[in-house]
Length: 306
Image (cartoon, rainbow, N blue to C red; front, side, top):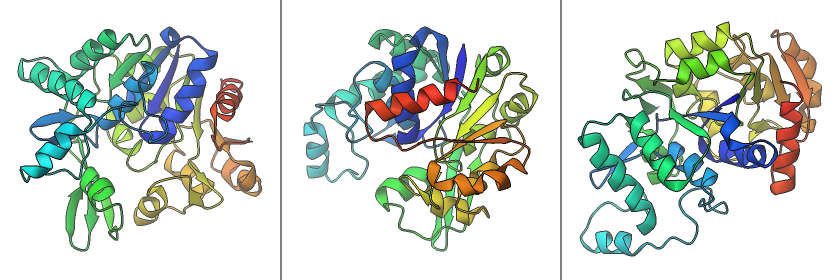
C-alpha cells in the first residue's frame, strides 16, 4: 500500500498518472481540508472533491476542478438573487456538497461522509481527510486576514502576504486511519502540491508530522517549484512570505525533518548537492506534467525510489 499526501491541482495530475500504473485499491490518499469553505450554507471540501472526482473519472482535467461537462444554471440564478458567486459551484457538483452537509448535520464525521461519497461514485482508493476537526488556513495580508479561498479565488491571490497560519491545528487530531496508513505504508509520497497551503495544513497536525518522522518506509516528495517559480498558483508568494527561498531547495527545507528523497526537475539539477546537505537524496527527473504520458512517467520514476 502506498500513501499520498495531497492537495490542489498538482496532486491531482500526479495521482492521475499513478492510478494508471497501480491499482486504486493499493492507494491511500490523505487530503488537505485546510481550504474547506462554506458556500450557500454548504460544506465544500475542494481538495477532497478534486481527488474524488479524479478517481471516479469525473474530474474536469482542463480546469483542474469540478465535474467535466457540468453546467452553472444555479450559479446564475444565485447571482440574480444577489448571492455570493465568486466561488463557482456547478449544478452536478452541488449534489456532492448537499449530501456532505446533510450527512454532517446528521452526525456523520467528515471521514464517514467522504467514504460514503467515494463508495457511491465507485472510487476504489481510500480517500481520507487529514482530520475530522476543523483546521482553517488563514492568509495574513496588510489589509487583514483572509481564508484561503478568499485569497485564492476571490482575490485571485493578488494580495500581498505577510504570513500564513492554520487555525485549529493545535487542537486537531488526525482522522481515523491516517496514522495507521502512514505506519503501514510501503512508501509515502508528498505530491507536487503547494508546500504551504496544500501540504502545510496536514503537517500542522503534530501527530501526522510526528508519524512521518517516525516512518520506517521511505518518504518521497516532489517539488512544485521549478526553475525558481511555482508551476502554478501562489506557492512562490506563500513560501516567500513564510521565510523560505522560492526554489527546490526551499521546498527541501520545508520537508527537511522527514523526507528521504526529493524529486527535483532537470532545470534544477545544479541544486542537488545543496539539497543533499539537508540529509535527503535529490533525484533529478522531468517533473512537468503536460499530458498523460508525462504524468505516468513521473509516477514511474517516483515508485522506483520506494
